[in-house]
Amino acid sequence: MCIEVLIVDWERLGTVPADQRSALLWDIFDDDDDTWSPPPPAGWVRPREEDADWCRRYDFHGTLGSYKPHFWAGERWEAVRDHAAPGLRTALDHYLSALFWGGLPFMDGGDGEEESEQECPWDIRTLMWSAPDDVPGIKRLWDRAAPELDTLREPFAEHAASPGSWIADFDEFALLLKDWGEVMTEADRRGWGVLGLHC
Image 1 (tube, rainbow, N blue to C red):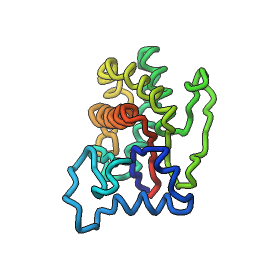
Image 2: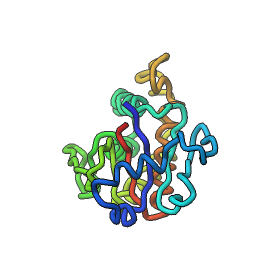
Image 3: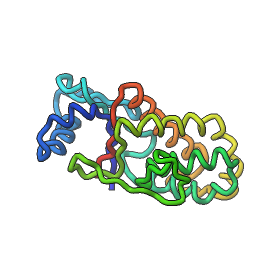
Image 4: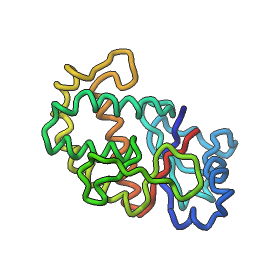
């Protein structure tokens, strides 16, 4: 299973007929197109120039497009969360809930104990999605968590490290979360939504 993470102008996507949206998103990021320059190994990728004004793709460090690192980041967090400071634990619980587990409980003032899954409105097969109105809240969670993230280094090594596996150590865990932070920061800056396409 793989994931393609895009930030998208929600209004622009809404002008595309429902039965054409998925194909459009795949076509404009078709790496086999001869007009492309080789994409960087990680970071932002622009689609063909004529489509570049309303979406971007983000390639995560070291994931090769696979969803497995994202799944395992969630599992590593489960192993280490009891050893995090309360404020960091709350922020990362909600942050990772929005990214990996389909819940946005913090948007309704929830405590995160009950996940509230939502269906993507675009009739597109996704592994995650966040509407533009949700993105600022997710970014704020990252902004709260990021300064304290390094406090997890030692407990992660003791309770969550898994050499030879996806998200083997703290550095890989932190890098994946920082990549997601970059996605949410840029989507928030543009007022766009986020789609994690299932591929």
